[in-house]
Length: 172
Picture 1 (cartoon, rainbow, N blue to C red):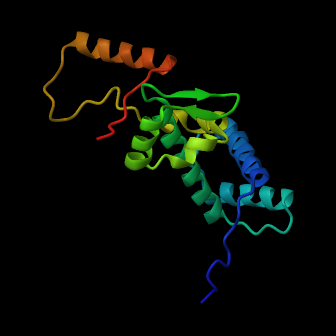
Picture 2 (tube, rainbow, N blue to C red; picture 1 turned 90 degrees about the horizontal axis):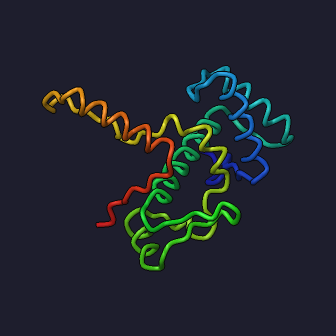
């Protein structure tokens, strides 16, 4: 059995930035983040060439992508809340002390309190099409709606997609 901590990779800012840049290049070419094993191996090779002595693997890269997606989703949820602002220049989230206490207690957003989301714009480019909003949600148990209702739902969805719509987060 390997000693505890062996094989754990510390993702430096430079390594994380390089990984995100590689992801963006691949996403631009393929328009997906659902890559095959050979794609992950190729990305692994690129990173290991850029950072000699760093031991990576396709599995570690997939895990890092999953953590980045979670971070992006949480940060997007936080900044969409009414009464919350995001200062892009300082990359900090602005909210009252009371709100922060509720966010931290309910959603564990403490990591964003001091430093925001480091690579938010790049992550937004990668994940925005993969993040669900529920705006067009229709359940199979719902009775059929009128054509006008569907048109209104679509219009509201399109307006929300192009604006910075603020949505409340359930803090109870």
